[in-house]
Structures are given as structure tokens and as C-alpha cells.
Image 1 (tube, rainbow, N blue to C red):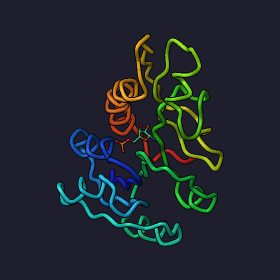
Image 2 (image 1 turned 45 degrees about the horizontal axis):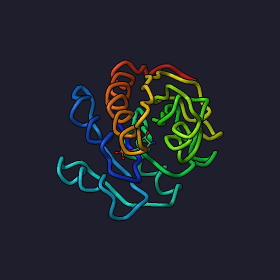
Image 3 (image 1 turned 90 degrees about the vertical axis):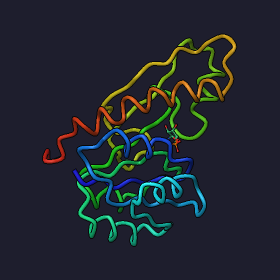
Image 4 (image 1 turned 120 degrees about the vertical axis):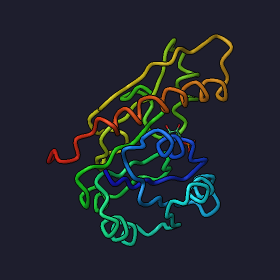
Length: 176
Ligand code: GRF
């Protein structure tokens, strides 16, 4: 598949996809923070990348790049209905066991909740934030002395496992 990736931050999931999903090609990475780590990852691997906050431009570029699947990998912005309706296949990785703890600060919320377990979710993207059909989840235990940092790190490790799995098994010819 031809993959298009949207990022805002460190880009560690993006890097993991590049390293792991070797049967696929990341043809474009678009970031909405000018100097984020994802930009460095793109440079390191020679992947075409662009900074933009203009969704119309983004849609045009992604269509021109003929992407089969768009992956929101740490993209900290809600995509519009226009964006969602422009593509058949968009997925997102979120650091909680959805439907719990949608939106920002999902790790903090899980930690504050007293829950014994949290995790991460790969799901289809719809116009409702973090609400599309769930494709795959992984659980991560919350340990008594966990901090946001330690828990985030362990959730990331599971993200590095489930996101490539979903990509490798994704049927982009499926309609709807
Ligand atoms: C991940 O925890 C992901 O679940 C969330 O944003 C984070 C991105 O991290 N949506 P990175 O930029 O891939 O390191």
C-alpha cells in the first residue's frame, strides 16, 4: 500500500511504521507543527514531508500522492468532516482503551481514574473524535508507582506492536 501519515509530535510511531511495515511505502508525511520530531524522522529516511495546517491543501497532496491508507500517528488536531469524507481509509492510534478517555490527556485520565488497566486503540477515523469503529486494542497494566511518563512509555511499546499489525493486515480495497 501507499501510506500517508499525519503527525504533530515526536514521530516515534511514524518511525516504527517505516522500520516495520517494509512491504508498504510511506509516500508522504504531513505535519502540523513546524519543527516536530516527525520532520526529522522523514529527513532521516528520505521520506517526502510537508508542513501544513491547510486541510484543502493536505487533501490535494494526499490525493496526488495516491495514498491507499492515511494514518494519524500522533496527529493532535481534529480532522474536519471534509477531510474524513475525502478518503475511504483513515485510521488513528489513541493511547487509551476506547471508548474510555477520548481526546487529549488520555494517559493522565487513566492514571487518575484508579483503573488497573489501560492501553491503546487503533480505530477508523470518523468526524466524531476518537469514535470510529475499533480495529485493534492492546491492554497495558497500570502499576502502583506509574507516572504519566512510565505509563506513556509502556503504552507506546504496545502502539509499536498493534499499529504495524493493523497496517499489514489492512484491506484497503474494502469499500466503506
Ligand atoms: C501516541 O501515544 C498516540 O497514541 C497519540 O500520540 C502519541 C504519538 O506519539 N495519538 P509519537 O509522535 O508517535 O511518538
